[in-house]
Amino acid sequence: MMRRAFTLFEVLVAAVIFSFIIAGIYAVMNAGRAMYDADMGRLDLQASARRAIDIVTTELRQTSLSNITISDDDTSIEFEIPVNITSAVAEYSGPIAYYKNDANQLVREYPSGTDNIIAQYVSDVEFCCWNGISCVANCGQADSVIVRFSFSTTVNQRVVQLNVTEKVAVRNVF
Image (cartoon, rainbow, N blue to C red; front, side, top):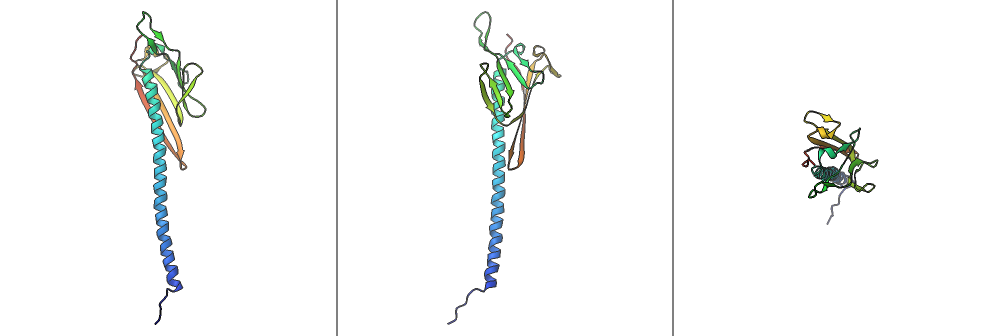
């Protein structure tokens, strides 16, 4: 009885076909992983942006326009919020400041000298007292504050960017 075996040529053809199948599976898995990493990078940016805009706007809504000071280059803001309005004269917190530091983080400074990191990946910060037409230097002449944040990070050698703008109407007129 003769046994039939595979020839060397048949084994090589099978190995080449198997290699193409493995390479195809690897390419699909690699593309999926790259998309997953990019999505996670976008998710990190969105979470950071959401946290930053929520914290800043929540506090800004509590102040009055006359208590807001924006730096000349529009990259930092300082204001006070009322802590006691039951007395004849409203009592205010110490100054609360927001700005971007050199490590691309949004910083909340309160009390003075105490820094709290609010958001990561911050590439640009802009504050503007808005009078309905344009930005004005004196916030007492404005009707709202515009807050703009730009976020940027690199994921798998791709730059992912996100811009957030919020118009904040302050509520108090003390």
